[in-house]
Length: 195
Image (cartoon, rainbow, N blue to C red; front, side, top):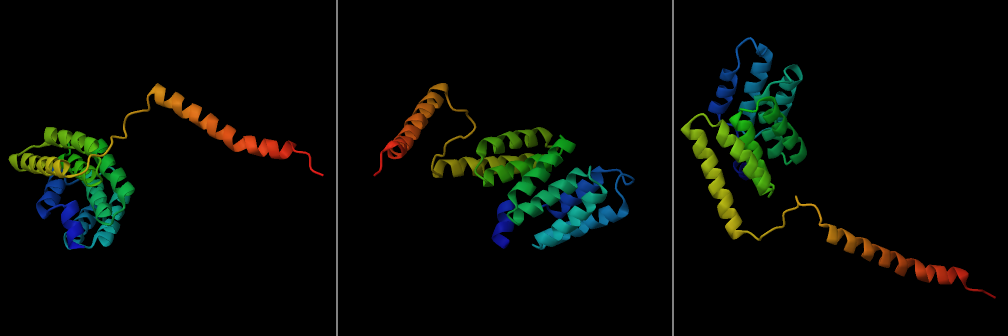
């Protein structure tokens, strides 16, 4: 469990405080703030499922709270719930386009999922949102780690390009030949005279 927590990376207590300090006090109800803080404490102690419940409860009451979506995305990532994690991190980035942690954690998750192109895009946006040297260093460190991983890993194909027209035509011809090969014996068997 601790290894998973290290891989995904958790929000530090300071990050949680920054999230709460960025919002005016009147923006979030007190119970939402308390639930968010409780979720951060649970997440920092490795209790991701319980933390996710706290964040989910807070987001039911404050659905526009981008940092709540970031925290819930991290909690889901720790639990290996990839798609909900991507959904919440992406939503946080849409709700607050200048939120450093939304883009950073989204990029980090894409790198862990071995989708480097999307990871680089998110890290580029995170770098644009970085407001201090520590945030820039986080991005630089993550980019160095990804470059190192790419050097030592097997090359994988990029699945973001559509098939060429030549490949599609060749595939269609192959499909016609296969269908003909399957149905030709069936047709001759059905037309055979039986005694």
